[in-house]
Length: 280
Ligand code: ATP
Image (cartoon, rainbow, N blue to C red; front, side, top):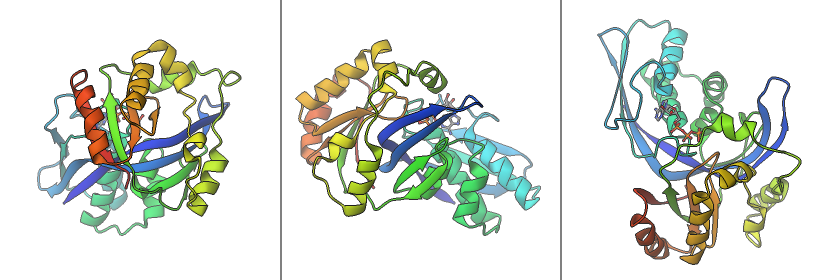
């Protein structure tokens, strides 16, 4: 069974407070984009979980989120069958696009079918949350408000289709580092409630004024290239530009594909990972 595993961007990302357990309460709007990995899952007679990928940077051992997902599903089914997983990697790794989480989500969904478990989506979302906070959203897809540690999800009316340009600079940002260095007293909090109201009414007037990502206050001073890309996107025709998740990928919204191609050509001269896609 081959599943398309879609990436996400954050239309807005706010951090409310630090919890006693060290995690943070967030309030964000997540959005699925068309960029996807292809995850092929099959049951086999050989014991164990075997992972392969066409990307040398994807771990093919127990640390792969797809492996963890398969282990949980086999345990729930009480199955001793083997599982073979191949990940055709298209989503940049360590990018803030939930690349690993979405592969995990694809394995939860595929094995639910292959093992005949017939668990409802809501149950899959529940059992996947401890593996990674972004996995329940990747199972759900679309446009959603995420609260708590990011796993309390409410589906929202779909964000309009928008052409998206993604540029990932060649740096790795550690998500725990970004959260640890966040000074909540000093950040400008985006108006997430206003965005939710606008999506509910499908009112796109001043929509971009509700967008913001508080983690930029940590990553931009440490990696000025993120601010440079945001600025260059606006100079090359983007209607709006922001960092996704804890970065370092910057996305921009463009009027249409032709406009995104013009900017894309500029960025391809400077960066290897430049992708044009759309919100879905
Ligand atoms: P998020 O947006 O959820 O924070 P990310 O896009 O920043 O995620 P990933 O691409 O998921 O980051 O990679 C984070 C780490 O997860 C990498 O160090 C990678 O080794 C590990 N990893 C585990 N499974 C996978 C997978 N299936 N694909 C990519 N990376 C994986």
